[in-house]
Image 1 (cartoon, rainbow, N blue to C red):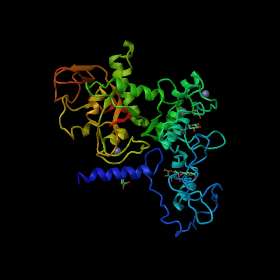
Image 2: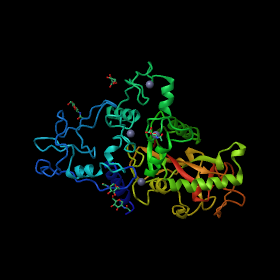
Image 3: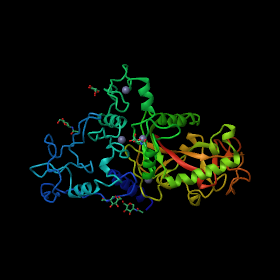
Image 4: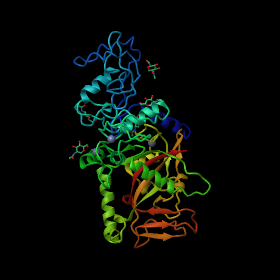
Length: 431
Ligand SMILES: *[C@@H]1O[C@H](CO)[C@@H](O)[C@H](O)[C@H]1NC(C)=O
Ligand SMILES: *[C@@H]1O[C@H](CO)[C@@H](O)[C@H](O)[C@H]1NC(C)=O
Ligand SMILES: *[C@@H]1O[C@H](CO)[C@@H](O)[C@H](O)[C@H]1NC(C)=O
Ligand SMILES: *[C@@H]1O[C@H](CO)[C@@H](O)[C@H](O)[C@H]1NC(C)=O
Ligand SMILES: *[C@@H]1O[C@H](CO)[C@@H](O)[C@H](O)[C@H]1NC(C)=O
Ligand SMILES: [Zn+2]
Ligand SMILES: [Zn+2]
Ligand SMILES: [Zn+2]
Ligand SMILES: [Zn+2]
């Protein structure tokens, strides 16, 4: 059973990811594809739907044009699922692959929860870019570019147009991506939800509408484009905190922002405020509650985080998906080891190479996953020796800072309250 499980779950992961779902991560049943179009005519494609596909289209052609924001659809693919070819009944091409997709599309047209096809065909979690007259395939130039790079298999450095939203100027000569410094700054600091407007300071979003939109769809992960200031900041932290001597730091391949639902954030923020009011960290120039970013490595059963894989699996043994969905839970503590140097708490490290030791793939992948978390450190009690019986921080403290030296080669931070920590980024790096 133990050996059959990972296989079954990785199949499940593959299955789930083959059907881009709505951003909320709720599983919808997969539409029924036609088994053999030639023997099963689409007689029942509901009337009132556009009967023919664009005339340039031949049936079953999944050859999409490679233009970035200039295409209007992966033209050969079903308008609803974007996964299977449009149905060709011998005479004409229908907009959908199947009756199920046609029905779903019609019913879901005015559904604010959004059908799969209203999202970017690359990242699947941001809405397609609508320029005022038509809807594009991708949410942003960043996704269009990445998608096309992957399609070609090689990096095409000659970009035809400035990567800033709305800009049609040629990029600055010499292999640059933007036409000007101003547009470079804009492009590197876009809201990660809409990718159209600059993000607010100390936020990933451009305005409260985008923040609310994201949080209402959470928990979910949103890919942060390579080149974005957030990607750089996370990748830089990974690199600078890789401290194991004699092992080279792997390259960060993907960074995803973990979007936490409002209720989960509220209890974290309340805890942070309480710690702040006790310790007055802001007054001494630190962050509220002495909040810090710390690494945590864990077990991944599915392929979450691999290229284009943004849907959680629903396995209770996939610690990665469990943590991203509902954050850390001390009551599940010790299931694996039943023992911790500093007792029953949630362990993180400032050292990426230490957390790497705890990152395990129970799936086939050439990437490994690690979580970057925000942790309310508050007043940390420094410890050099093990205290395996702790279930709360020592009196007068909010956490334990296990320092290098003594029984430990690398630092650890231990908190004893579920609300002292939230996963913030999923980072994928070369295995
Ligand atoms: C796309 O179409 C071109 C020309 O019709 C063809 O040569 C090429 O093999 C097609 N590519 C794919 C992936 O179908
Ligand atoms: C809209 O989506 C919700 C949640 O997925 C679903 O319960 C509801 O039936 C949908 N409404 C329509 C008109 O499809
Ligand atoms: C790279 O992109 C440019 C502009 O789109 C195009 O003219 C050129 O042929 C491409 N080169 C390769 C190797 O694909
Ligand atoms: C928030 O940003 C979105 C995307 O840029 C924009 O469409 C919307 O009008 C903005 N809302 C407010 C209240 O500024
Ligand atoms: C998990 O996913 C499988 C396959 O999609 C489904 O059959 C099962 O009901 C799901 N379990 C839960 C608890 O959602
Ligand atoms: Zn996208
Ligand atoms: Zn520009
Ligand atoms: Zn926005
Ligand atoms: Zn999983």
